[in-house]
Image (cartoon, rainbow, N blue to C red; front, side, top):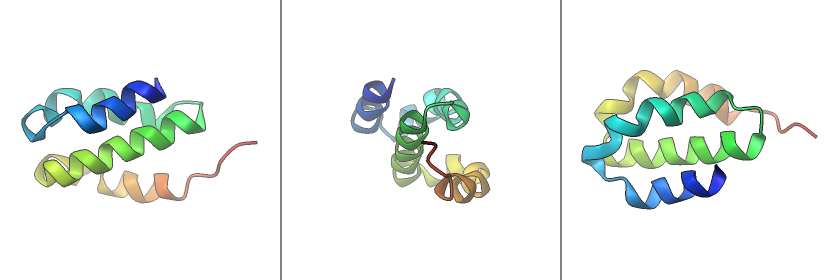
Length: 71
């Protein structure tokens, strides 16, 4: 799943952000910390490409940036 999120960062353009945004946003609550990190990185790329479509997730970004890594 982490590899797929890495690929999404490189492949998805600004016009396709809306179609994959809900699935990637759901991964912010995934039990694996690596998947949560990659999802956050993908959402950051989406924000760079289409900031208007990401405005409702900004508070969640702040929460996830303070996410503690589980041992």
